[in-house]
Image (cartoon, rainbow, N blue to C red; front, side, top):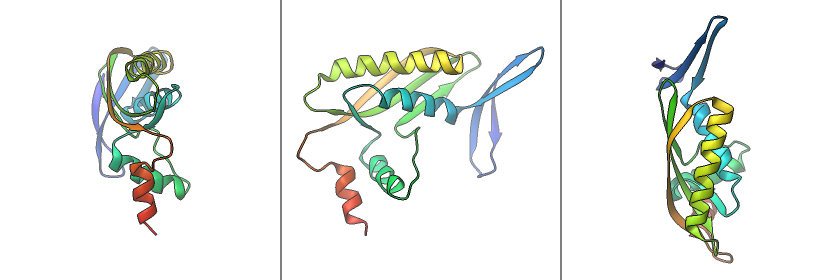
Amino acid sequence: MATSTDRVDGTTGSTTTQGTTRGRTIIDDAVVAKVAGTAARDVPGVHALGGSAARAFGAIRDAIGSSDLGQGVRVEVGETQAAVDVTIVVDYPVPMTEVASAVRAAVAAAVTDLVGLEVTEVNVAINDVEIPGLPSAAEDAAGRVR
């Protein structure tokens, strides 16, 4: 059963609860997003996840020793199913449609295997291409912050 919860940090989020005769398991949407993000990052040809602003903040987080594994990932989780939206940056000259297909397969497999939810769809948005030798938006933004 999916429920809305008030979290300690003041945000409201959804959780998935799976009940058994021995107890229940509660999986937060952020956990599903981290699983999906980690699976997407491991696909060859994926340079980064998220839009340019998210990557800029990610570069700053990385510099201070923190990271957001769910960056660039949005999930909708129900009782037994999940839908995932992933925003990626691909490496040049890797075929983009092949990378998107591989991301779809990797994310669906990881969420199904690790979280136990059926994945109804994985939408992949490619919002940039990383060309070797050119500074990325995240590097530009991180370079301006001193």
